[in-house]
Length: 219
Length: 254
Image 1 (spheres, one colour):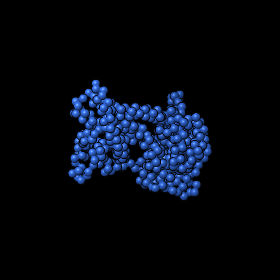
Image 2 (cartoon, chains in turn green, brown):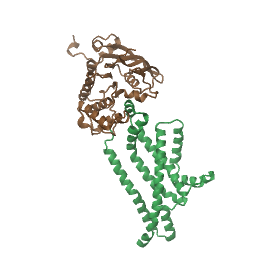
Image 3 (tube, helix red, strand yellow):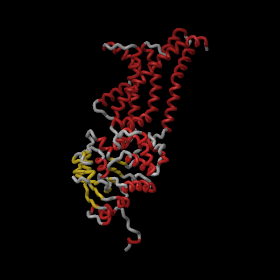
Image 4 (spheres, helix red, strand yellow):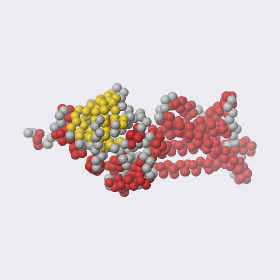
C-alpha cells in the first residue's frame, strides 16, 4: 500500500466528495418536494394528475439513472434547453428520486385510518389543518424509514454522474487508476470516501427511527 | 319551528349509490334532551349520526342546528362541526399526540384559545373523568375505556351544543363499559343535549328522555323509554327487544 500516494491525492477526493455531497443534497431536497407533491396527488387520487404522476413513476423507476442523465445531457440541448453538467445531475437525481419519495410518502398517507380524518373534522378542523396537524405528522413517521433508505440510495446513485463529465468521487478514482495504475489505493480511498459520506446519515436515520418508534406511535 | 328545538333533522335521505340507507328521517331534539337511537345493525343509525355531524353528503332533506343548516359541502361546515361533538366506536385519539395535546389541539388551533386556557380546562375535565394523572402519556398506553373517556373530554373541550355518541362502548371489554357510561350519565345530569346510538339497553333506559327505533332507514317507533321497553307499539320493535331477552331456565317448562 502506497501511503505517500494516498497522502498526495487525498485532497482530490475531498474536493470530489464536496461535489458528490452537493449534487446529492440538492437532488434529495428536490426529490422530497416532488415526492410530497406527487404523493399527495396519488393519495387523494386527483383526477388527471394522478394518471400523469403514475406514468412518471413508471418511467422514472424503470429506466436507469445513467440513461436519464444521457437523455437530459444530450437530449435537452436539442430542445434548446441548456443545462450545466451539475444542473443535469441534480435534475436527473430529482427525476429518479421523486418517484421513490412519492411512493414512500403515499404509503405513509395510505396507512392512516380514515377515522383519524373524521374525528379531526368532527372537532372542527378544516381539511388543511387536518393534514397539517393530524395526518402529515403520522404519515411522516411511517414514511421516515423508507425516506432515509431513499436518501442513501440517491447518494450512492450519484456515482454515475462521472458519465456526464462531472468530477465526482467515482470520476477521480477512475482518473487516478487511468493515470497511475494505483488501483488498490485509488479504490480504497473511494470506498472510504463513500463510507464517510454515508455512515453518519445511516446512523442518524436509525436513531431517528428509534425515536419515532418510542414516541408513542401506533395504538 | 319550536324555539326550544336545538337540532332538527328534516326528511333526511341518504343513499350509497342506489342503496337507500336513510329514507326520510324526521327528528327534533330539544335543548338538554337525551335521545337514544336503537335499531338492528345496518338500520342506518350510525349513518344518521354521521349525517348530523356533516361527515356524509346527503341526497335529500336537511340537518339544522339552531336553524342553521349543516351541509358538508358548505363553506361554514368546519364551524358547524365545532358545535357538534362526536365520539366514535373505534378509539379515534390521535396516536402521535399526548393526552393533553389530543384534548387541547382543537381548542387552540380551531377555536384560537390560549394554551394556558385550554390546558386549564382540559385538566378540569380530566379530573372529572379521573384521568388527570394520564395527561402526559400517549394514547397507546391507555385502556379502551380510558381512551373513550379522553375522546369524550376532547369533544367537550370544544364546548359543543350537542354531543353525538356512536356505539362508544361496543368495542370495549365488559368491565370497562361502566366507566364510560358513568361519564355519559354525568353529562346528561349536567344538562348536555345528547344523541346516543347504543346496544346497551339498560343504559338506554336509564339515560334516555326519548327512544327512537329505526329499521330499514325509517323511524318505526318513537316513545319515552319506559313505554318503549315495557309496551312497544310496533311489532318490529317487539321483535327487536325480544332478541335481547332470554327466558329463565325454570320458566321454560311451564
